[in-house]
Length: 141
Length: 387
Image (tube, rainbow over the protein chains, first blue to last red):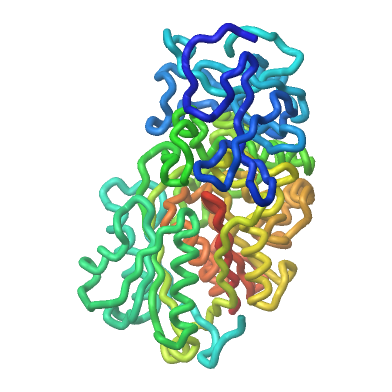
């Protein structure tokens, strides 16, 4: 796992493990899993699978408006998609450490954390998925 | 639902302020313009209007329009329902007449949005702040993700997306109320800068400005006014079912993404009208992006998933095709003033059913017309008109 400095963008979003996992919410009655875990006592927090496959994707080619976007003024396009975590749920996530042209629906992915602003000294960390067979370290280019 | 003792609710007056950018006029001004046009079209005066429902997302409270139209004491209810605001206003207006409480009333929508993409805030959708902070609170991102999955599952090409945009701008040439009225060829659309892959800039509509007003009356009142009877046979508004994939979704159920608010609103509207998709002569389908029109062709029951590739290649949704879709260029060419957009579709259908479409008139004397809107966070409204 990569060396990380910085802090999570929100509490309760992913686990504080060396290999972090997203935290979903499981409906106490139906067993249905959603992400993120909603507040209240209907849902029980559950760690989600670190690995999954790509369900869909796009490239964000323009800087989102602020508010609400809290990222840096400098903008480089990023990949974002939905990752199917087997038997659990499909989660929305940035895609990291992959060339845009190499992204394919169905590709195996694993979770990582990336900085919202790569140039920040104490970056805010957000969740992302990267190719499961790809580089084990480093930060999204 | 069948018509009560009062017969069908009819649309007896229509008015529109051209969509696009009108810097000199507020959203309210454009609403006033549309109302006056609709009153004139119906041959009535403002004091004749017994009630109104109004939608506006970003141009202030719709009921403030009474300051400009006259303080008649009219009942005026504001509707705020995302992209379904217009459809919800129309639904409510027809219920008021169906109930027998009123004979004649109005549904009005107007809006004026800042340039650029909509900047929705997480709290407005009961989402945590991090979702917006991290750059997920973007409608274009959702639409692109949704069509990427759909193209993968059903074999739709990027060229099909371009065909939809190309048709929109060609149709809009003949629609005086449209905003973007210059034809754009398919290659130019494909070669334009990407906004969110696979969509280029011509494949997304833009937030815009405009106003639309519709005067509704009981069948009895419509006969008194001597207007052609454009009957509102169905108006349905629905929210999302389980397992759907909607705007601003941090997660989706496994196997989800096929059930939609549109499918249930559409099925209900056809049930109310007692007809099926094969009976519709012209359709206005929500096309905030080119792929939306494609997906909505299937979600509204007009073709099977995947058939759109052939339908578009063969021109079946052109003005002279089997099912003309978005005859005024839709949202792609008109832009999307949220409060007015759904009512624009109904305006266009009334124009078509009256045979007043000019260069964009659907041939063959159409008798049935269909509208559909879709919006965040999973709402849909459908109408069916008959003449």
